[in-house]
Image (cartoon, rainbow over all chains, first blue to last red):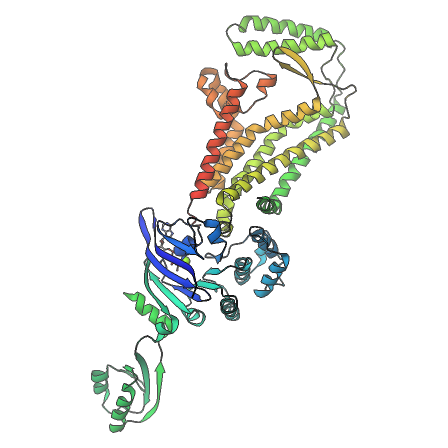
Length: 299
Length: 318
Ligand SMILES: Nc1ncnc2c1ncn2[C@@H]1O[C@H](COP(=O)(O)OP(=O)(O)OP(=O)(O)O)[C@@H](O)[C@H]1O
Ligand SMILES: [Mg+2]
């Protein structure tokens, strides 16, 4: 697997205060990589260093084999990005905005601009002034801008911010398609964790400027052997204490929930039948990314 | 580079404010022509048939003043030398001072409007970098495969283009209004310049273009300063405030200091009016053309080094 982006022990201090404390990870070709962390974790700061808006205090960032510090133009030419909000020239039309950026890369034809505008679904409004755009439309224009030069690496800081559910779904589809069909690598930072779950192949969790973990999304959500099971039962007939003591169960109105390994489900079932307790159903409650995230970043 | 300049021009000229500036310059120049014409019709100027006699009296006074002040003040002496030489030249060559307005005298009058051009150039200069920061567009601008130096340079060159455009607009509209309102002079009138102790005749058209450019040096230096301040502090009001204040007051304050302190010659404004070396006397004795040019270059380099140094190093966290 080809590595498109590589962070090597990247540190950043602002006014003597360490903000990023040694990040290292790789992003591979064609993967959608999630960048997760609570407010102030340093996601935007890291992205600013990757695109060269901020100098790296220590360490190195390499994009397609080119160091952003040593070969700025070579490295940044492979990147398309939106950093925080997609701010555009409000007094220009969407099309004129795109022309601005098209002129700054080599060999972008009119057809390419039109193609990108169609892709993000902005064809109707592209010749309107940007100050008439809604946030979602600006978000789309921002995405169009980042795709003009067919970047190898697409970096989107909270791309779904301001989009309606249909829009989010659409963008998600685009990103997956770009990654799969064009082998583009995509880095997404987002607060909508459920979004990440649907969009990303791998995620990195950072907190206080430190990398906590990089994992495949499925491993991350399902990594524990133990899952949560909800038992829907009739009257527990005085066995509540036994459930609490032995299984650490939580008693609910119409049953109980319990965190156990898969193999233990039949064990409990057998006991319940033995105790003559009615069982109406059993369901698993998989932890969502959100719960996992809160768990990991809690300490 | 060309593309970057096209980008900057697009951003500049697609804003209504810029168009308003162009319109104001044109309207002011044309309006001034109309006003002067109105004034001329109301109080028609008489052709002075006794101009030679008047000049003779003036010459006598000039000589006396020069005799009494000239010894103590070298600059005064030079000033009167020039006055006397030109007046004598007029008498001996039978060239009456222009009494009636014509297109050229009018174009020279509107030279005063260059300070308005200066105000507009400074306002634009102060916004070029700082507004990219306040709009947040700087983030999308700086993540392109183009060095920051090139981006800033394209902005500065666009500023120069804009200023030159305002100047040519002022010149052209003035010339047109002058032609319409006052017409060409009856006989061609050359410009009389005094250099190296001699009076020489110059083409008035070229002379006026030269005068416009020379008069613009001051405002261009201040625009460069505004550009620098706005780049370093990302604050356009600060840049506009300081630069406009200096544009309006700089000359006067420097002149006050120049009376008592010779170090005033190192002040920017003592050196911005290069025309004194062609047609007048410098502010402080002993100043030469090359001294002033060197001072201007030094100031220019300081402004640009600060602007480019800070811009290319800065962490963009806007
Ligand atoms: N210019 C700056 N000067 C000082 N501290 C800064 C600066 N920029 C960011 N920080 C600090 O760096 C830390 C990381 O900020 P950053 O914007 O990268 O967080 P983030 O992960 O993007 O947060 P969010 O989820 O809110 O967008 C914060 O604690 C912030 O206070
Ligand atoms: Mg952020």
